[in-house]
Image (cartoon, rainbow, N blue to C red; front, top):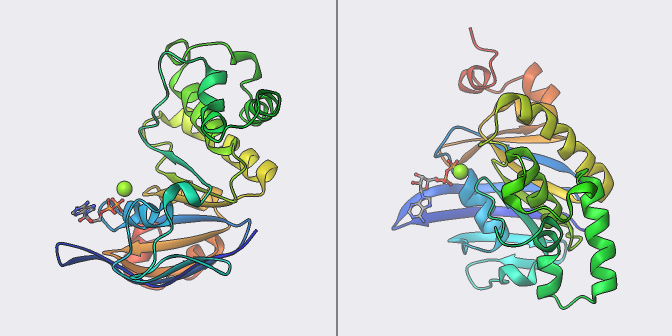
Length: 242
Ligand code: ADP
Ligand code: MG
């Protein structure tokens, strides 16, 4: 387990800067939220962490290993990071069990070991009894839990979430927050969780990085952000403004 370090990370599209000199050190096993309004660069940061996008400038490292810089780029498949996005794609013709085990099949993990890990992953998201169902036979929340199980089956050190609850209704979101807490506790993985929902970030994260227009506004615990927001914009954004 190692920390994730972002140093002066910049990203531009067609010369237009969208992430502007981001510095963050995320401790191993920490649950971190990237919080900010739509368009502030959250998904771009996550995509750079995942290796889908190169950085324009700066460095992303995992412990001693440089993952991305202007000169170097470690491919997504060589990072062993788990990922869950808003539009989670399950294979419709495959059972829950086969969907969850798919990444292990790609890694050519033997079927005994594969079944053991699938079972463990399904226990964490409390879907042990649904192993043989097809995605169409599940609710939206259950499908999202399958995607969660699939992201942890390879035992990643780091799991990246991009607005994983955005498509779910409020009642389900509250329930899923409990699943995320259990997930974090059981796996001990470092979690980077992107959301535009301040209450979600406040209730889940150990620390929150608040972003606006590609810049870090404040970085701290939910308590610190709430007690001492750095400026009026942030106070308003987290619901403390008048
Ligand atoms: P967020 O996830 O916070 O809503 P994004 O990271 O998706 O924000 O986007 C930040 C900015 O970067 C937006 O202005 C968006 O239009 C722009 N952007 C994101 N991806 C691309 C891309 N592939 N090409 C051009 N512009 C992009
Ligand atoms: Mg986004």
